[in-house]
Length: 69
Image 1 (tube, helix red, strand yellow):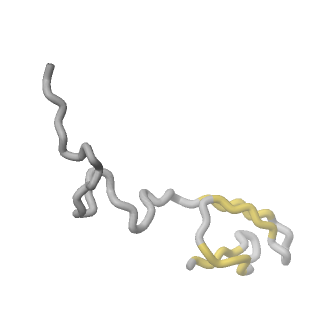
Image 2 (tube, rainbow, N blue to C red; image 1 turned 45 degrees about the vertical axis):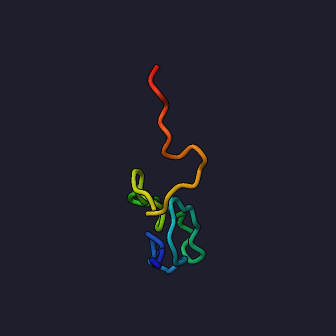
């Protein structure tokens, strides 16, 4: 986890991860508006697009192809 500190006086305000945070420092009363530098590209452990999980599908029509016509 990352320490979140006041930009004015340096006091530790919190620890953790954030996308956007607005927090007031209790020591110097400065408003701290923080935004993540970049958003995570994907959730950890989520399957990537186009990648299967190695398991076959048991859907009744899986693998069937429509006949042209």
